[in-house]
Image (tube, rainbow, N blue to C red; front, side):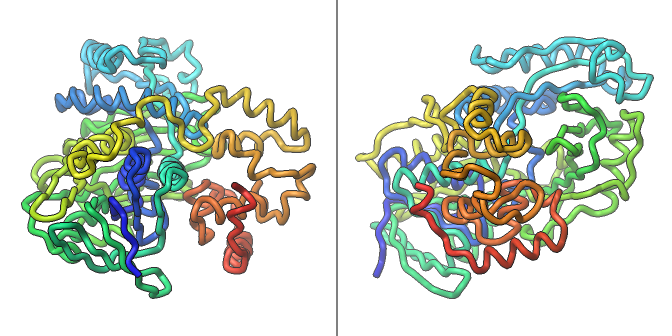
Length: 502
């Protein structure tokens, strides 16, 4: 039996999930197909920032920065539980960039958002008197502070997919699109699950949102000609034990004029990244190399009093960014903007090239606007108008946490904080009728209990321990090998109980 949809989206990264959400909200029947887990690759390997991209001003990417800053405001209100304001400190080194140039850049950064600012603006500070000063080496006297935001990147993808599903979309994970054929009326696609089961779907239009595989999909699956180059760039990050106690992040200028962030991470750690290295291997399995690790350690050591070395790294990750353009020039200077190519030689095919997490909502809106003539019955753009992602209905997250602890006084503060900052108003669906920690079921490790695991499996497409520990959360930083093995065994045996969480 062939199931019929208006739109088939291939790719379950942030762009594919955002497009599925936008399309479903316009009243279209939507199918999203992802061969692995949601956010399994590039979208879970970011620097975890929703930002305009301060450094892009030096490349005269004013339109991209302005667009991203507007999106930063939209996303802060759409998902306040997983996106939070973050102040950044830029220690000044006059031989790298003069102070006037930094002030000019920050003035533009404060004003390119077309007046839609809710975050505080930038200012110059004395590092001798600012709380971010003591961890820095003594030669740093002056700094600049500005605002951006931190995001749980993989959760942003999952919540987009959840919202799409709740608006009627069908979401297939661990399902590969193995072949497509095109005629004047639509696309026919063969989808194959990880267990080898094959199904057929039809759609009036197809979206290729496969990220680093966008060209490979065109060549091997859709078999459609194209003339766009895609540059794959690997970005790597390291995580080390916490290097400072305050809640500011740092942005460090490097002698090669690149920048590296040092970000407070998961309470007890510091996240340092990123690198930009041209990449030619399998996008599914990028790994940090020793040169990148050394680069990031040295980048931090130029600024912090406390020195770090590769053996201090407790975790590292790498992702492959699909950037628009060839391999000429410095990888860090290639645009992070996106390109949408609509092929209408037969049934419509929309190819998504490039993009970044911050602009994913706008990309999805632009994509569906491009496809609007194909679907005259669809409603118009809607995602910028205050529609929260699942769990983001409350803007006052701190108050929500206090209310949760008041109604569940047995809940440890750290667990309450993590749940609210992961699930927002939907935390109560996980807790259910529990009156104690014991009521949450088996304790797997850290502060992970069976009730949360069951919720993730039933409602968020979690199948393997990696899904739970490294994408739906970062509890993998706190799990032992034995605890991972126990969680793996439980997930292999546990049935998905979707109805109990609806």
